[in-house]
Length: 111
Image (tube, rainbow, N blue to C red; front, side):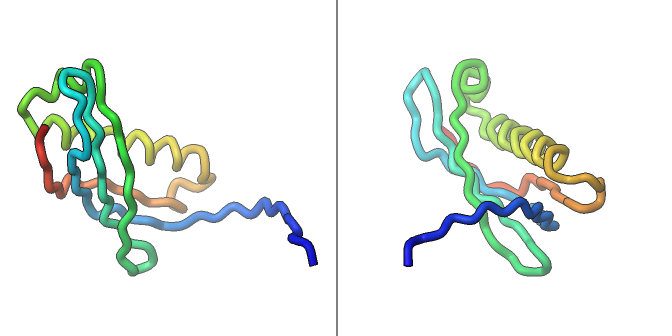
């Protein structure tokens, strides 16, 4: 039998809670940019799991970092909140059907 491809249009809404995150630097191009790994500590229906994201900061974001690791923590936190807000607006029809919070429980490593 040959493989059969079937398209499904079934929306899936899950209540994922982000309990916190950890930030690590995984690469730096001096004076230009930094690559950050972010581990999200999440909970879905009472079951813990982790999700990973990568961000590249460059330009004014990179310059603004300097030696203040709290800057990177807040930058990542704000990016996560913006990303989650956009995702929720695009995928939910009921405000209460998707819940996500981003606490800044972090483990940081500077440049």
